[in-house]
Length: 287
Image (cartoon, rainbow, N blue to C red):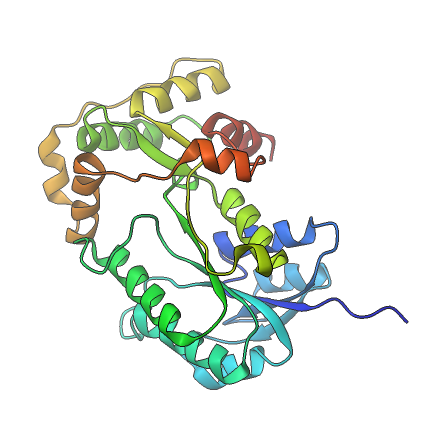
């Protein structure tokens, strides 16, 4: 009787990143057994996973006992934390809860999804949270790797329309012609799956992940090429940035003043399946 494949736990399995990790794990030559952590195993999204033969277990990063149960027999895990709902424990606490549960379970390997260039004092609250979780992970004694994506291509719509026109105008007003590094959740899944599949290669690595870098004019031109027609961009004054919430205002200012610094050329050498923005957009339109 052949030995069973090792079990990989995916946190946030019905979200964008978790779903991408699952797809990438399934595409491996020797895929692991996948266990999906879901707050609501009876949801339609969770049911779709069950229909694929994936084990779905009830669990929540705010409930430590549920994490203990979910980690039984697990060889590796993918962790992504999210901004909490009002009244819920902080994102930092979510990360600490999982790390503590992983320690209790003596988890052999963990991949954490952070954010590129994050430090505890960068001045962008949700970047700082990821950095603090990384520090807790370093202090935990666990064997781990970090995939740290830049801005998501998935935040852009597939089709031209009012939403795209305004998004291009808003980002152009903030960036003032500067390039923004981008990556898709598909690529996050691809790299995370590579890490989960080869702990000996990736243990201790922190990979700032980007697959492309474009100005908003270049994004606009890419849409025009893919759609086969001219795509418009709204004009907005730079002062529009002052109207958005503090966290995102700080991030936009940082995008302009500093910006992500992933080494895209080196990343493409190591991870040759990374998609350019244009490749991603063309793939989205096929779905």
